[in-house]
Length: 92
Figure 1 (tube, rainbow, N blue to C red):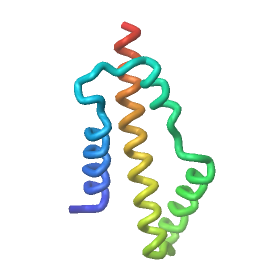
Figure 2 (cartoon, helix red, strand yellow):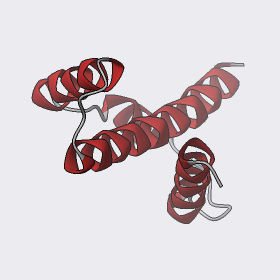
Figure 3 (tube, helix red, strand yellow):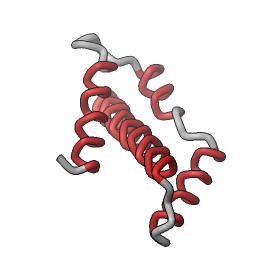
C-alpha cells in the first residue's frame, strides 16, 4: 500500500473513532472543530519539509515528520468538511 493511501486510511480511521457515534453534532462543537488549526510554526515547518522534499534532500526523520504533518492536515480537513456540512445543513 502506498504511503498516501495509508495516510488516507489512517485519517479516515481516526475520523471515524472521534465521530460522535450517532449523537447529534451541535453548532458550538462544529465551530470549535473549525477553529482547530496547525500552529504557524507547524505550517512553516510543513512547507519547509515540502521544499526539502521537492529538492530531494529529506532525511528519513524529516520524511516521517512530513508524513505526520500531512496526516494531521488531512484529518483536520476531513473534520472541517464534516463540520461545515453540518453547519450548512443546520442553516437550511
